[in-house]
Image 1 (cartoon, rainbow, N blue to C red):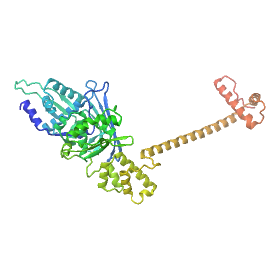
Image 2: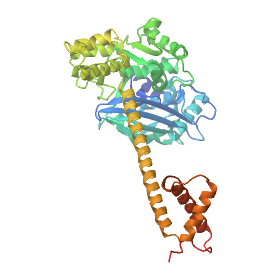
Image 3: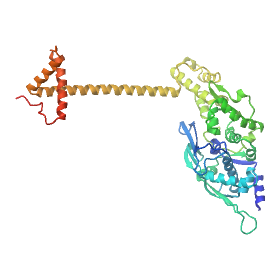
Length: 484
């Protein structure tokens, strides 16, 4: 088949596409094509409850650009997405090596068939192959069903040809890539979701594409989500951390949100609904409008952030364990911020431990009401982390006090031993030496007469001083000429 016909055939198959869900969960590139000067890495970090380990874990992602080609950009991210589609169409994820032509990628991406586009594809492939991805507790292994640590390059090998065959028939020599085995294993394990690839390519804002990929993955669980605004913007969308305030972040995200509303992916919301606030904390809420765009019905392997009916989210489990029905727990989790629910759970457990009468008659009913009505936190309540810090501080203070008392005991013991040694030395002194020391002490302290309480300590102190001097002058006659 001729190159033009090949690319037309490929394009015709692409209303339905695929996305690797680790790539959808976290940014793998900058949101811009302009890399800030001297920036060599991108870092993301968040915390989740790991159901398998039964504890909160920190997930870190560090993306390190090469010295020659730098960090991946929004365009490179799109090229990676296109390569996933080519792999699906040509090998159905059965082979790590994939042959293609740059013309196929250009047509797939909707770029003009001109020299700049060929050069840009080449730069993307070079850059992608040289970027190092560090996933610390952040790569979901769909086979082991756990978060793992992986360090890899997305592409293991890149070969760029696209020159004409010498036979003169006009056929192009293919270029090829070889996926890294970590990424390819994720493909083969089925950790993929269906996307509308042409819809992706039609989006104008890179931020809108990023949101579509992340939210589409989450909408598979439920159609209504509320996130902490900063965590959503910085750690899942990749907005630069120079945007800090809630107003600044919301303004930066709004054009992409508006685009997704206009194309029927998101339900339009009023500003106070889109950006709910609790005190100084900002949140962001999304409601799915068109399920067909968010997820094209393919089954998704369970992950900790892709919960199924058999594996409810941790907050749902937390509520049901405290007597709330499952359906009501699911509704509460869908309607209220996770931070609020977690705080109310901690307050509830604290009240139960105290035997508080408020939770004595109907504990589950009180818990539900405390979340829905946002009951005020008792003044003497300490959150779990604050209580842990207070307990740690108390243990540290106790340890400091223990060490201080031990030092005092050691010093007292040393002083007693030193005094006993000096007394023994005093008794061994020649009579003339004792009289000389006593005469000096009386001369320096006229009026002192009582031996035990006044003169003896001063004599022993003078003896210690002289012994110290004797130690530095070994040729002097010793004080210890024993009485004969």
